[in-house]
Amino acid sequence: MNFTGGIEFKPKFISELKHYNAAKFKDDLIAGLVVGIVALPLAIAFGIASGVTPTVGLITAIIGGFLVSALGGNSVQIGGPTGAFIVIVYNIIQLYGLQGLAIATFMAGVILVLLGLFRLGTVIKFIPYPIVVGFTSGIALTIFSTQIVDLFGLTVDKVPGDFISKWAVYIANFGTMHLPTLIVGLVTIAIIVAAPYVSKKLPGALIAIVLMTLVVYALKSFAGVEGIETIGDRFGRLPAEMPLPHWLGLNMTTINVLLPSAFTIAVLGAIESLLSATVADGATGNNTRNNTELIGQGIANMAVPFFGGIPVTGAIARTMTNITNGGRTPVAGVVHAIVLLLIFLFLMPLINFVPMACLAGVLVMVAYNMSGWRTVVSIFKNPKSDVTVLIVTFLLTVIFDLTIAIEIGLLLAIVLFLKRVMENTQIKVFSDQIDIADGTESTQHEVLKVAKGVEIYEIDGPFFFGVATKFDEMMRSMGDKPLVRIIRMRKVPFIDSTGIHNLEILIGSSQKEGIHVVLSGVNPSVKEVLLHAGVDKLVGSDHICDHITKAVVMANKIADSHGKLQEVNW
Image (cartoon, rainbow, N blue to C red; front, side, top):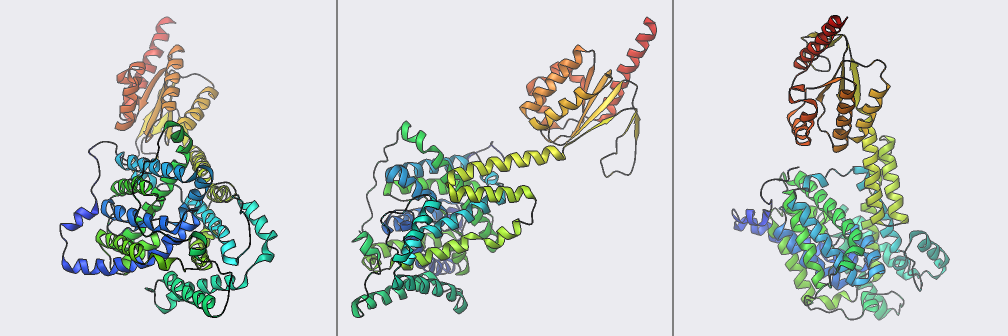
């Protein structure tokens, strides 16, 4: 992590154009057409599931997808609405309305841009894997639970927002199930499952939607089958015009209220986009410019709210579809956005005939693919701390909401990590003699004689607040007071403010008792922190040694001079 230097914003689109040619454009054109067709049903489905209209889902995919490809740091990333945001978007709309969602999305975009400007792209990727799996699995189950009404054709006046109450309503109204609607949904799922066995390049979701839309239209028109709800039945005539930008109405009150939701959108967007970019890098051999990617994602999320859009992030499935169809530059992503725009402008009336049960089937498959149940099973073989983080994050996501799940999941992971570091950090005490090769791979042993009254305390691990307290307790529990305390810090990679504070207290209390303190093996970065804190003024600059040999020589001289002084006084 590096906070210094210039702004790291170098979009791959600009870099790729320097060496662009007709052959690359042909590959990108084909890939963009395929991805645009694949993205169409997903954009519509994610829009509806999030609590907005199909039009909003498409607009998000068009504007967001274009900006992610044009300004991002990955050559093949495809951006747009994703299943991961369904839960958080739906909850925000329920609590704060569409205006609140627009403000939260814009704020999330600002946070993403700041993460990129401060070069935190690498840090985001270090979020513990059990947390990612936990809330992803939780989102999958929540998405599935939101599709029960449309999949089974239940007659329900109002579906509660929380998970448990929702299922209570489903069970109470299960007798209202509409069999033709259920059949449409199940056949949709079957087509999506079977499509890859015919051809891995076939967009199963689109094939299912086209076929089932034709079948339902025929059943309604010629067989007199009623009750299978379509997009047009629910939303009426969908507009086929790009909306004009509108003001969001930002003020401090709404910012304070929506900041937690914006933070959740930003963190989730950063994780998903960088995870998608990492998968893409593994498939193409390219390297993502992580900070540029975050800035590009941030700009996209700042732009789409002005047109009524929902949050945007990198989509793994669409990105991999782009790669498998030959896409290798951001031009493919731009073509995908143009394809969606043309469909939006000229084919929007046909969207009205798509059955809601068909979209429910698409989302059930999205939820299944997101669940990652095989990964969940494998994590249960890991240490109990990882399992605990996964279970807590999963339950919080399902029972409460994603904002609480991410915040508490991160907090729990940090606490467990610090506990593990504290348990693995050792503090050793030496007297009489010390082997300077101890703890190294060196076979040449050099034993230093330590004078009487000199004690050496070696800290093996980071000197942060937990270890600082542990070290302080050990010092207090020691019996006879030495003349010199050597604190060997060769294995201390960093020291935090609490560690410095405890060290200052130790130096001060030792000096009051006539005990000298010598610091040994301080690495340059830790020494810089100590000098900045003024520790050298407390202990004396000559008492900060770069090697244990120098520290022992100094300590032995102090102990010897003290012994001779006692003899003279005697």
